[in-house]
Image (cartoon, rainbow, N blue to C red; front, top):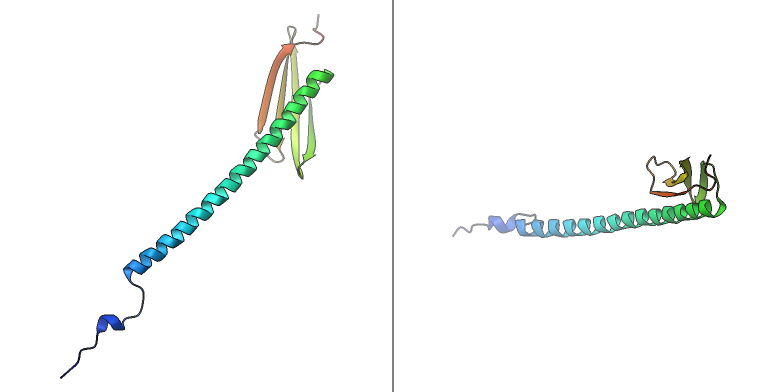
Length: 125
């Protein structure tokens, strides 16, 4: 009697089901990792906006309290990073427009921009 060898059992490798399960596990881990990284990036962006917001509020309050009449741009170090705070004042017809912008160093777009229109301190006659 001639015995046939079980050809299918003799082959090495993974089955289709095992491969699909392994790929599903890898994709699940990858998606979880990307979600965590996305949340970390969003949290940094939110923290930057909160810092910029508080700097803009402080600059606007100083402008109103000390009645400075000039525009200025200055660099501030906060939280181990540099920020540019720009204040511009435009006066006309007894009104004064105060605009405060806060930039993160190296960015062209401001993170925060406040504008306030109020009566001029010393209207031009």
